Length: 265
Length: 265
Image (cartoon, rainbow over all chains, first blue to last red; front, top):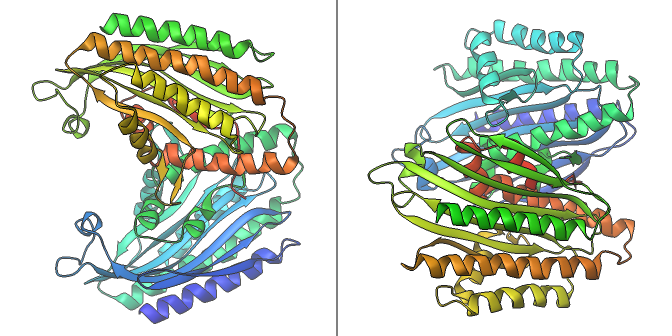
């Protein structure tokens, strides 16, 4: 499953980059990195006129968890050894009427193995049509797979992407799941792939629909301030960010999620 | 000592605001806030042409530490009750040739009482004269007081304001001290006041010297990117930020330290 998951994540990355490039005048730049201790990854970043900054990262790393992590992670009673691979993206859009988005899918193996992932949408000016389409496609994806529970994953997303100090959600949510290990790894993998396909079917449509929407300087200012919430969430709370920084992940890849321009007025 | 420390911090705040206003065309705006559970504070913020954004906060709060905090804090064996007051400032300057600065002085009382604080300078284009003056004035302040240990406090600052994920210091340092409780509270307080006076004697001189230095668009871009490190430090590592957010402090006051404009290119 390591190899098959990795192959899917890499292929999805290629198709996502192609779909995003089709809507912009720029192209992705790719940079490889390798990790001391085993494995590495590839960052793809595009700075365009539609996608102000979008990073799509893939990585596959092996290592041994520190004791601090180990006690919180399944399957590490006998050994702290782990394998983790995944695809992760965050898109910050030039036009404030186009929502920002995050998507991540990952496979982790210790003494046991599981999938995790999710995607959430952060509109600065929410259009019902976009929000409904996004939630709808994720519901459909979950409903097709007995191993997935849409209501649970939607709630998990709302709870995860929440800023307690602001008492604000990060955006309008989506789905979030972790430790997916139903006992039928083929069924789990099929669902994970469905989420990837749902994302690539849907987010580019939202971008196409909104990218030429007129906006004012005030709209742009609002977007730049709201992006501050994205930074606050990722640096104060995001487990993936902390996990990456503490396990010697690639700093540039991990912090590629941060917006290109932010205001805290 | 609660009242005397508070009176000094409030007075220092007034004098710092006046010294900063003297170098700018803008004035500070003040906003009071009160804390559920006891106490409150006052934010002073100026957005000027020299000081792009500077926040000077004073607060005096009382409460009861959560169990999570309590086990790490002295004097809480019998009760989690605490009193904390202090003054805290961060200045982000328009001209990238003028260093950013942070200063904080605080008095905490639980079953025991202590002072903490420090100040550190973050130049984007370090001038030897500024850096030497800053360190020199802090050395002089420490050397005048038997309760203070300059070498220790300087090292503590370098260790504290360090970004492990970047393997970079935040700036050029300064001093940092905590749990100052020598047994002679008058001597401790005299030192804390000396730090306040050293700050107000020195930083405005650095601003005056550099504020009209010519700079290029490239210099400004460099400053905006380096400001990202300031955000990363404060949100990922700063104990004061985490302490404030977790103890129900005022979010606007705590996050006033974040720069007005930041780039993660």
